[in-house]
Length: 215
Image (cartoon, rainbow, N blue to C red):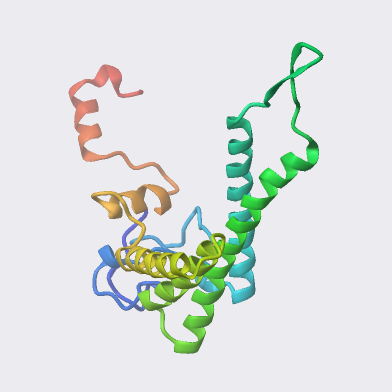
């Protein structure tokens, strides 16, 4: 791994430390590793994007997910078999019907994703804060869009409250689902040294078994 800085917990050496006093509480979207060095594999930072870019990105991602969902549903149900002049034949799905079956979920998925990102970003700009309440407001807005499919105000209210609670809890707890998220971040986004450095355990094994030192 890369060389440690003199003070890896210093906020001055890490612009994305979120004013923390420990490297175990680094931001999810960070531009440096735990030692303050640049990442060799940086990933997108949504906080650097404007509301339009975040909304457009969510719209495209939701549309892609909806297209996959619609295509899976379309393939799940086979074409019906009908009887024509005493013979059983397969009635093929028309192109228009297939496009409607794929396009409708793609549109709804895209609208839900875009609504969440837009409201979340606008709430962040209006409140001038980055906390879980922005995600709650975004979740409630996208829940209204989801419930509007049923055209019933009671379903819209329930889905709005439910999605607000879910998105707020997810934002508060973070996306990490591992027991040791710091280990995962080091594996994914740490920086390797220019010259390979063997661990002490491996060096001890090679000294114990010199016939394998070139492996």
